[in-house]
Every structure is written in C-alpha cells, then in structure tokens.
Length: 296
Image (spheres, rainbow, N blue to C red):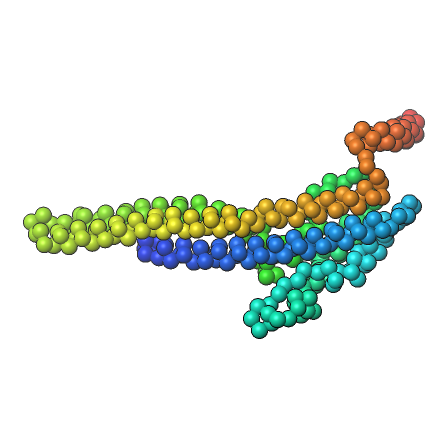
C-alpha cells in the first residue's frame, strides 16, 4: 500500500501525462480513420443506389443472389470511385489521381470479415417481405468488419473511444486524488516539529510546504489535461461522425429492401400479416384437435 501511495504522490503527473499522450494520439488517429471511412461508405452507398436505379426488373428474383451480383458489379466500379489522398513534398507535382495515392474500397473490405462478405451473409434478412430492424442489421454487418471495429487492426475502437470520452473527468479526479494523497503524506512531518529548536522546525515546515505545493500541482495538471482533452474531443467528434456513417449505411439497406418490396407502413404490414396469422392459428388448432382425438 505504501508503495502505491509513494508512486501516486511522486509520479501521478507523469502517469496522467502518458494517458494524455495516448488519448491524443488515439483520438486523432480514430478521427482521421472515421473521416476516411465516411468517404468510403459514401462511395459505397452511392454506387449501390446507382446500380439499383439502373436495374428495373426485380420481380421473382432470388434476392441473395441478386445482392451478390450487385456487390460484384460494385467491386468492378470501386477503383474509379475510391477515396484519394495526396502526398506532400517531392510528390507534390504529381496528379492526385496517381494509382499510388488510391486507397480502394476493395482493400478496405478485404478479408473474410469484410463488408461485402458480411452483407452477403445477411442478404436473406432482406428477402423477408416484412421490413427488418435496419439499425440491428447494420450493427450486425459492421461488427463483422474489422476495419470498422478496430484501429491499426489491433485496438478495439468502441471501448477505447468510451474511455477517451471520460478521460477529462478522470484527469480531474486523479488531480484531486493526488493532492489529497500528497497532503496526507506530508502531514506526519508536522509531528517532527521541535518548538525548542526553531532552526530544525523551520526545515520541517519548509519540507512540508514543498510537499503540499507539489501535491497541489497534481490538481493543476489534472485540470490542464482535462481542458486539453475536452477541446480535442470537441474538435474531433468521433462518435458523431461514426453515427453519421452508421445511419447512412442503415438508410442504404432500407432502400435496398424498399426496392424489392416497396413502401409499407405498419397498417399495411398488419393487414397482410393478420390473414396469414389466422391461417396458422387454424392449422395449429386442427393439429391439436387431432392429437386430442388420438389421446381419447
């Protein structure tokens, strides 16, 4: 316990500084990645809607097979609609459309758990004539895409983003906590004051004041780190950007379903479902009657 208190009273500022550096790097990297993904999914949604508008005959089609063909046609068109990034320095004079500067969506979704693979697995959900929960559908698809759930292919985005959001409060708490620990460890020095020897007592009081001053610095550092992190969280709102991308993709799946089944409100859905439900109830009742007759 004493070792922990000693560490917190002497190295808490350095520890908070390390947390701040990690938080800043992760937030900035995650924000840039979220911007890039938003552009990727914008291209993806645009190509999907364009392909849907071009294909007119959709009656009596195998929807999963149709979606696979749709995704295949999108793959062929993606290189010309990919997100581009320009290089600075010696490559400044080169065209921004240079093939070396192209980050294709095909690379973005590569792998077994890529976006296209996840959509193909969930295509049967869109085959139902009853509209699915598009938010849950989108969440299931994106959870299988490691590019959406992880940064650098290793770190999980969701839990670390939540930690980043509460870092400002953690810094304030750590600052106050460090101050109280420093004061509590400095107070016992007052017991060593010898009022008969003013010179030694002066040294003890000086050490006490220095210890309390250092303890106060943890609160100052905590508040400063909290302000810095709050400003970055405000300037780089990762959650809002990811929610925007999520809604965009969810709307795309809704448009796909409407393309095959048309617009349908709740009343229309109930109107169509009630006769089928009554028929199923009658069938179940018939089976129960047969079982009762056999039992009797």
